[in-house]
Image 1 (cartoon, rainbow, N blue to C red):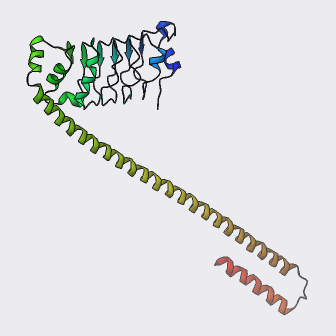
Image 2 (tube, rainbow, N blue to C red):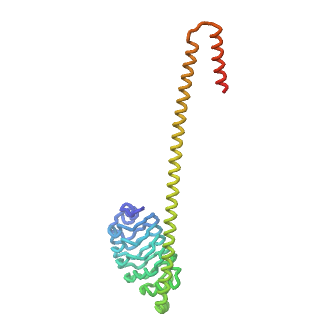
Image 3 (cartoon, rainbow, N blue to C red):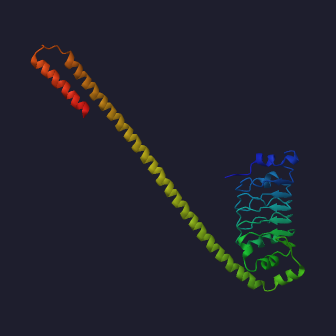
Length: 268
């Protein structure tokens, strides 16, 4: 997991002479960050924060950034809009291409009274029937949604029939949550299958290594046995020829038979 470290923030604040405590703008995009932390303690004066194209799953530890005006969290893994109530100065929020499926979570932005621009395009909730009408009615302070200006007439229309739109949105959220539960279960099963396969491959590798070690040991024992037999044979051969005996027909016949046995053994 990649964290936001003080060293990372200092390296990204060269325009402020690497001073982080008075930093007003910082770009931490494309850093593979998986969790937002520390910025609300180190950089209380932040006005612009770029965190796009990371791996952030949750909006957290941002509530104490009272001066924050623009927050870019596009291209992350966020599923719910939350924890921005303390960002009193927030004017622009970019959540393009995340995984937000709870459209009703936009209502947590009601407290951000200065919020005028919101981007949700590319999220599952942006495909909901009644999506734009719901957001326009839920956030009366908005002036722009997904780059399109909200006219006075659109706002009036959005407030009409809102009850029915809320009902449809809830149904679509329930369907989204059901699909997400299925996706998570499939992912869990896939990971378990991968773990089992890895465990099987690991055991097979261990078994092969054990088998190779056993064969090497057997070969070494076999080589040792062959070496011992050869040494015994050489010793007997040496004893046969070096043992004094009379030169008789019997001794010649014995020598002949000894050589004949050796020849047949060699051929075999």
